[in-house]
Amino acid sequence: MNAFRATLVVLLVASSAAHAVAPVAVAAPDVRAKPWATETNARVASIGGRLLAANGPYPCVCSFRFEVVEGAAAFAYSLGDGSIVLSRAMVAAAESDHELAAVVAHEIAHVALRHSKRRDDFLLQQARWPSADGAALFKALLWQIERKADALGVRILANAEYDPMALARSLRTLATPMHPTEARELIARADLAEAIASAIRSMGGAF
Ligand SMILES: [Zn+2]
Image 1: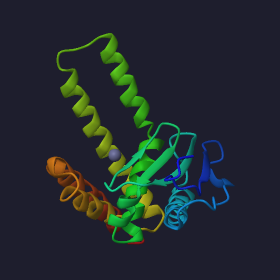
Image 2: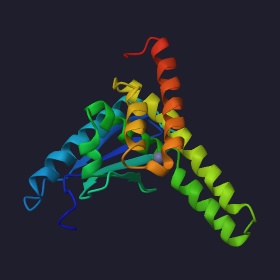
Image 3: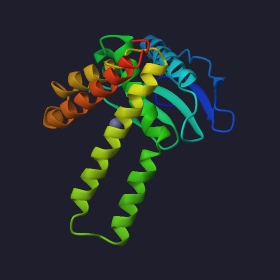
Image 4: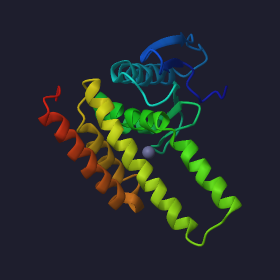
C-alpha cells in the first residue's frame, strides 16, 4: 500500500435480500501510517458507517470501502467496486461533519445507483458505434448522473439525521475555489439539493 494512503479501512456490505447493513471487517490501523491518516480515515469511515446503517434498502447489492488519500486538491470520487475515496484536502475543506457527510452520501449514491457502469456502458457503446453528438450526449449523461446522486444523497443524509441542506452548502463551497469552471453547474445542483432538502424538512424530518 502506498505510504501516503490511509490504512484504516472499514468494509460494509449492504444486502438487498435482508435490507441490512452491517460492518463485516475492520482492518487494524497500520502503525506506519501518518497520524492524520488514521484519524481522518476513522472519521470518514465512521460517517460512512452511520449513513449506510440508517439508509435501509439500497437499489443494489453493494459493498463500500472508505479511504482518505494524500492530496493538496480537494476531490472525492467513487469506483464501481464500492471504493469511496476522499482527498485529505477535501476532508479539511468540509466545515462540519454534516458537510463531510454530504460529500460521502453523494458518493455512496453514485455507487448504489451503479453510475460508473452506466458511464462505462455509454463509452463502450460510443467506441463501437460512434455518433456525431457523442460528446454532447456524454455531457448530458454526466449531468443526469450528478443530479441523481445529489437527489439520493440528500435522502441518505436526512435518513441518517445529518442536515440534508449540508449538500447544498458543500456544492457551493466546491463551486468557488476548487471548481471555478463548473461553478454554474454546481450552483444549479446546489439549488436542486436545497429544494429536495426543504421538501424533506417540510415532511417532518429530523431537520
Ligand atoms: Zn458526483
